[in-house]
Structures are given as C-alpha cells and as structure tokens.
Amino acid sequence: MNGTNVMKIMATVDFSIASETILRMAKHYAEKLGAEVILVHAEPKHDRFDEEGYDTKPEVMRLKKDALALERTGIKVTSFFLQGPVCDMIINKALELKVDLIITGAHGHGGGINCKMSVGHISECLLLKSKIPVLVVPA
Picture 1: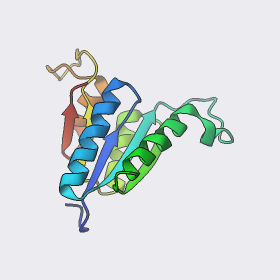
Picture 2: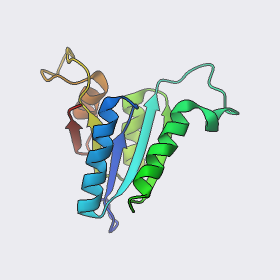
Picture 3: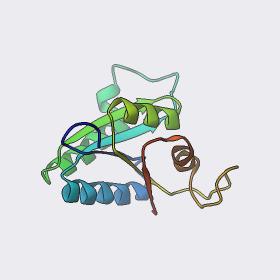
Picture 4: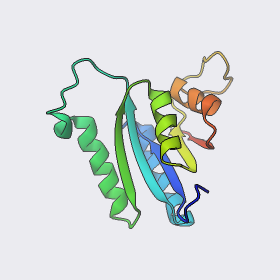
C-alpha cells in the first residue's frame, strides 16, 4: 500500500477499444479493494499545443467523461492529461502519487527488443521500467 488507508489504482487510457477493458478492470478492482482511481491519458508533447483550448481538447473532454462515469458508480477518481515521453510520464506520475497498481492495455503486436509477448511499446516499457506492479489487460 501507499502509506495511506486507501489504495490507489492508475488506469492508463488512450480511448481505443482497449480503454473500455482498462476502465472495467479499474472499476472492478476499485470496488473490490475500496481503492481510488487515477485516470491518465498520456501522449507525446505537441509543439502546437494550445493552453487556451486545453479544456475543449477532445482527449481532455473524453478523459473527463470517463472520470465522471466512474465517479457516478461511487468511486473516487482523479484524472490527468499528460504530455511528454509517454512511458516516463506515466511512471513519474504514478510515483509522485504513490500509486499501488498501474493498469494498462496490451494492444500492439509486440516486436519489442526485450519482450516476447504481444504487447505495445508503452505496455512493454511500463513492464520493464516500473517499480510499481503493472497489470496488462487484453483488448
């Protein structure tokens, strides 16, 4: 546990079909463990990112919608839209928030240098770099 009484589960979403499974798993574990959910969408930094239009960016609006759907079931949810090196941003935010578990999707076709499983490069990176347990769910 993270040193508090409430377990923290980070769910990484990219709004693909796999994200629906990730959200279901996060909800399941949060309900069973009395945990709160940290919902994260991370993407590479874009030079043309407009701070003024941040709240109306489609990804931010979708993140808020997904967070609200979980909150309506009684789960405490905090959401973060991150830009930068995706894997590192996810790991750093998880460490900063003292997350107990990261849930991510297994989409991708493998082919990574160190991974013989069929996972995407972000999932592979999280599995290899994270000191926090990572649950990879199929799409």
